[in-house]
Image: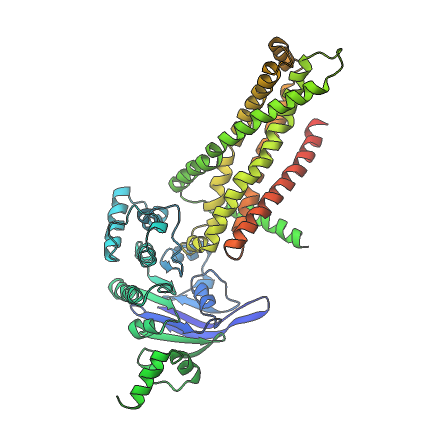
Length: 254
Length: 245
């Protein structure tokens, strides 16, 4: 579980995050949503330890990040997996080498043990016959799968995803969303996903945090989000014509 | 103030490079890869440039030695001194600032743009050590490149001087061996070692701290080439003053 208390972060005198307090539960897919510029990415980078907050605290299963020494922070980071928006796979490495990379860096396993683990994880993300290919030789959906495999290969306690289905077709996006949800339940990890895709919200939004201008505007789950009266949330949710029509149909009782 | 800020950040980067070392077995593979990319990959162009520069120096010297009192062996002497003292260490390093420097900046810069550096940081890896340290170690082999360049330069001078009909072969060999000061080689290799460090670190700095997209990677590469050249030329002046005067 990740507990965030009164988190503040700014750049060049401009405050981006203005006192966010929330919790992200273990074994659940937690979503951070909001419009562009609402502070989602800054919030996620604070959770990852890439940005140091000016005020407030982030607790990972009882351990407050800012109170840990450098080595403890590094140990904590080894328990984090991250799926970047653009996958962030290492260009010069094959799929297999990309997934094996965290094992090479942090374990003392023999190469055949590492390869066995890599193949198991690649099977888990349903990626076959791509082991020797470079990231540039595979599709965007496959790259996302490799990124997920790399993130979970060390069996992390926390999984962070920055817009994991951006740039993917709707069908592949749903497959990736469901894969993340399944992995979250299977590995019993705390997953935090940064997205503005309403399909993801409907598919996997077990806990949703809505940010607006650096504030936590609303939080709830995927059923509550369609019933809320919060204007900012409804503006966001029903900004798409499809959802607008679904809403109208609901109101008409169809 | 802007430049002072960059200089400060450059030295902070160096501190980051030499702290929290990457796992030895991983580092070893990275170093071999960098040696292949930065050193072995530069040999061809270095030999080509040095050979023809040596040849041109010999021809230019020959054409300017109009006085019949001056012995022809001076062609070899002047070529040797020019190649060993300046053309091989400094001129080749400036060329390498373009070749190796732009490669380093663009490879690190594109990793920054595509969030690969963030991925390393998230994993708890010291990205500076992982990316820059192997390049510095690989560039320790750079003096070997310059040694080969010296040989190729003098060979070029011999070919142009002797086969161009400017100086007899025996005179050239005599001139080549005359008044040879071994300290000049020491001076050249001290310079080369320092240039190697600059060639590895200044482009890395420009790549690592770049912001923006693909266009900025190109701008950072150009900027890295300009600054590496400027620092090499200034260091060359200072080192010459300190070591030779």
